[in-house]
Image 1 (cartoon, helix red, strand yellow):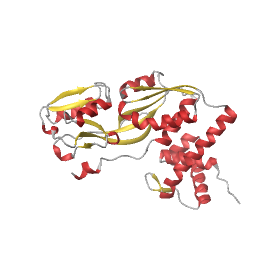
Image 2: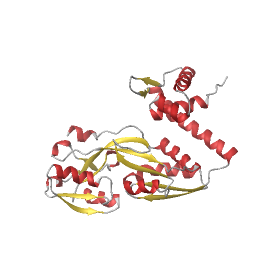
Image 3: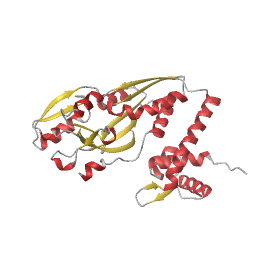
Amino acid sequence: MPRNLDLSLIRTFVAVADHRSMTAAANALYMTQGAVSQQVKRLEETLGCPLLVRKPKQLELSQPGELFLAKARQLLRLNDEIWADTVEGPIRGQLRVGAPPDLITSLAPAMKAFTDAHPRVELSLTCEPSPVLHEAIDAGQLDVALIEYLAHSPQGRVIRTEPLVWVGSRQSEVWKTRPLPLSLVDERCVFRPLVLGALAREGIVWRTVFENGSFEATASTVRVGLAITAWLTSTVPEDLQVLPDNLGLPELPEFAICLRLPSTVQPVAEAFAQCLLETLPRENILRHPEAASA
């Protein structure tokens, strides 16, 4: 006989997995912590395997939990789409999405999946530095945005954290040059004052080779060995390298990639936010192996 999964238990488990905390998940679901714990336990008993590894200060997913989470998200998304299409009607309207230049590539799969699932939504994309997107969200000019904040002061929902790293060409040692040639994406970029401040503290003189809003144009100047730049680890193109820690360049801080919505959230924005959470990698990203071992 076929057996049916309880979607309410699955929804609770996904909330716990997203927050890595029973208490935080309980607050998000407007439930007691005890109720959340009991629902996760019932789901584990139903599946016959532990989904969580309970540690003193945090929760982690077990290997079966990691595998189940991806399918759980798909199941909930399909349930919500069916409910929306048959009971509430298809999602429609305008959706204003924002992201900084370096995150556009990672955002694209979510945009494609969302527009395929909701063809009646008119989606528009704003590509601006994180400080500009922060102001736009607060002003209600965007419906949802990915924004980069320093890891110790995030806002909104943290998707993942990762370090800011120095990036250069594999065929060039331009990092030895003084003044140090830099290629930066935009003078309003959230990385810029931190990069320049780190150089100043080490007494490293620098000069700007290129400064423009185009991520690809910046990559081109680095690729041919005219300059180095600073990017998040996950955004470094495969043909460029994270410069090793032993080159005398200052250490750069970690950043949090955050999902921000305005104070008044539209249903279409909530649906897109969920799609983003299902599509983007959520684990913390460390420095590239070659940077650590060089």
